[in-house]
Length: 256
Length: 303
Image (cartoon, rainbow over all chains, first blue to last red):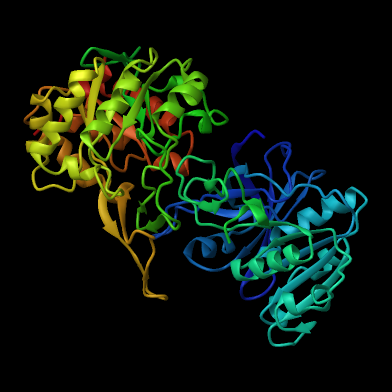
């Protein structure tokens, strides 16, 4: 899939809470093809301590209006600069990068996201729905405030939630939710993105029940397109670049 | 019309802009962004005799105006390169150099012999300066006797352009440069990364799995320019300068200090087409300042 470097225009910066922002970015022309699970590398080298681009999952795209949504969590200086972007600002991106979630063979699909890891699941959910599959989402956060973009997910399928403090949904982690407690799950395929500890337990659950599981990794990287070899994940075939061989891997392929 | 060509000790570069090893893959990774045949040269990823998995993750840390890396020469070995990668890239209309590394002199020699047989590879860049491997690498490049030993041994079997990449992690880089010139190098390239480290104060753990790594990016540029200038005082072979070059002005600075050509490294990660802008920028500078040839910039600092 051909990669590009372009200046997008920020047409909306919607602050969801103290931690999260959704940026709506307008492509200068026609958006090229992109797949769910892919990511962009955003240029943020205008800060005193920021130098490298920041890899960010594609949250959603609107092909009709040639816009892309990015869900950005303010973690460090780079993401702070992104969250401070204003309407009319430009945002330089290298895109689309990485492989993608593979479409399922069977229709019973669960998408499990934690924290900012929910970002690519919206785009995937939209693709699934367009293919006649209504997915279930299981979204986890520390508190009710961390459960974001729920309305967008609800338009695409059933949404289950967990919070660590029990303020909304099931109390605990995603693995404590009833959809993952049953011994006879009605799921054929899981897609998951979020903290590594969460993905590991989800992958283990999938393995125990012979459910196929694709995980999306968020390793630190410099380039995003296979040149620096910094973002490697340990796989059955040795070190593989998360940016080009991933970010999506079959959970059984990773040495977890 | 500015003549951008550079005579690198008999090797005719179409312009002074090359890409640094380990930052440009095999060129293929950049084909979507620009035509890599426009480059003066490409240093392909560090290559060793045998397959190397490299160091464990994490291998990278962002630092002010730079980054640390500890990749550790991950590559599939020179035979895989010759059999599988070389046939895919040999048609590039630019000079391809293989960056050759090893743990022992024998490994350097054997790897260089394999590359010597590849018709479309006019040179190697002998890496005696990688800070991220336990044996070999930088160990060879930090003393004159060991640098001379490896260069002399490779010189015996390698018949084409032999560029030697120098380590900045030394007391006197000019001394090493002179020694490798006398040992038969056709050119020297400098600087490789500076040994550095970073600690995550939240976890109180080192960020890199290897604790230390190689620092690159604009943070190292003044050191690199100084070293190029020092080496230019003592050697008669061409110098290929690098270290934090982000734009044409940076590249010109290295040339004024005495570099005949330059390599762009870390900047490729931030702007994958930056090298084209640098080529165009050097041409524009020459026009503006009345240089008919880019080679007239070499060592043209007015002291």
